[in-house]
Amino acid sequence: QVQLVESGGGSVQAGGSLRLSCAASGPTIRSYSMGWFRQAPGKEREFVAAISWNGGSTYYADSVKGRFTISRDNAKNTVYLQMNSLKPEDTAVYYCAATRPYGGTWLREGGEYAYWGQGTQVTVSS
Image 1 (cartoon, one colour):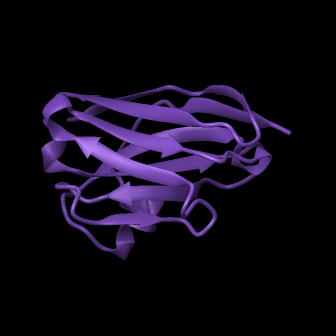
Image 2 (image 1 turned 180 degrees about the vertical axis):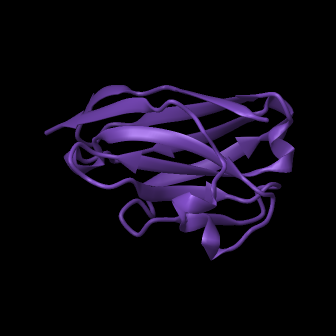
């Protein structure tokens, strides 16, 4: 089974940028569609972005559309989340997840993902 490790989190001021990475080991991530989710303290986990196995389809939460970009490099077995114009409300633990290799709006549902990373903290100060 695939194992996922997130990195790139940290603290940044509002308006700043961060780039999260999700490195996979085990089976190639070419076999999976990938998603990013986040969970803030006291809140439920929420969908952030997803990308189909070949990068042909991407999906975003309305709250991050136009500010975040998900991408993947299957040769490097890595998925990225470029986060620009960060806001304090983006503060959360960000998780990478893997699921079956098809596109569709179902990628917004955390329950559809079988594999999860341990998360990386993103803190945005005002």
